[in-house]
Length: 204
Image 1 (tube, helix red, strand yellow):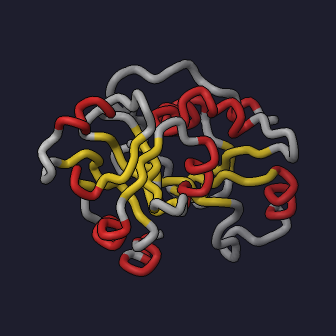
Image 2 (cartoon, rainbow, N blue to C red):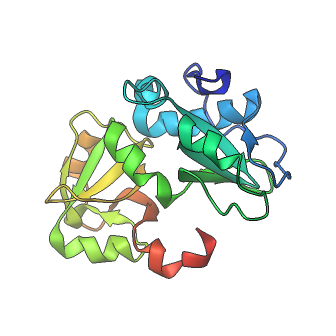
């Protein structure tokens, strides 16, 4: 594994920032960029970050192209060096983007990765699935289940009741607070959903 794939310490409060990357070439993340990415992923998968990068099947690494961060197998990354820079559209899985201000935003492309290692999960009722897939928050009356002992303001993966990952967000209330919440209270703030593949295809 490359050095930039080593897990960082647990994140401090708030989102870290760094100068936005401007190069068009595919390159490894800097130490600071890696720290920012892992801080954000830590909110969703916790200590499972170690399993994300130290996989037993094949080694994976992170690469940056323009402002997009890719999670890619090392053998695919090596093959990509044979493709001209202006011809390479993407490689591996795009898990997020750096904003112009230097903040890292996890995008819907990361859903499969987050679902595999998620620490906290939320299941929504069938009547709420479409609302969430149109970019709406999850309300208490649409909540089917939630992982026990889920804290408030932490990253969660949102599933259908048949265990299909729909997207992800941030909890507005803890598990215990959800039980006593008003039916119309927001329990999960929407961040990304699979509907974006249709609604925002050009931005992904």
